[in-house]
Image (spheres, rainbow, N blue to C red):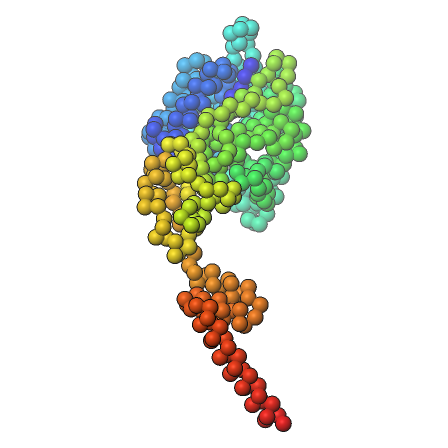
Length: 389
């Protein structure tokens, strides 16, 4: 028996959007792998959905219903309340807006037997509702987390009383989970304690964080199905499939990539008529920068006096790769450079030398000015000595 997990779809366009195409590919993959249950762990939409976006998700669901495959759908924090219940629930599609549980029956065609799976479910939990209930917004994090622990303790009892394979679905924050920038966010709001989830002893899979990861034990995030921000440009995107061998769940789920649109982020410096990669320090060949169809961000710095040497076809070449390429230029003025050199100078004469060079004076002229300055200082010192005497 196989269970498929998908999360954080964030439909933001119609049938031609990258999210819709990734969703269609995920559905094809699940059917090819012959999963018996599909779990959609929240954030199907980006907010209030359009009619076309609802049709995209409905088509995804109907292809499983046609094959008698049940689907569990959780509301995420980006999904509008009750929208999923109104538009997508039927006999084989089970939508959860609040914590609950369900036992799913499926027929194993190979073994010709009925199989059951028990699912405990925690959809997006409203922090605002807890804050209103507590009457003190500064306490809602602790109050909400304690409430989550109570729910998990009840789940632990229910799971241990089951004769069937069990798993837990959620949408939210697990303590210790990483953002797409490899950083662990603060957990001063409502979160699911990892230590409690690990004690459940069954697969725990959820949505909310876009980075695919094993947080600990059997606790996993499938991650989003597309790269949505530049923080995710190096992350693979896909779905998880977890198999039960008839006696136990396998130690880990299998990740299946959806081959997301490649993203390339370049940080460069324009020096002596060439673009130099800021990390590798190697020259960048614009003609071989990335294949066509790559999502591209090109950031570069250039000295003001070299701006006129920039390739006239720079924008044209980058837009041939990605018509919506983000091109960000930072111009460094000579004055900024001189100011830094002046700050780094150890004597007044060194500072003046940098200043006059910036004004275009030759070394001989600067030496003459500095010698006159010194003569004036010597005369002033001599006068002071006479007065003192």
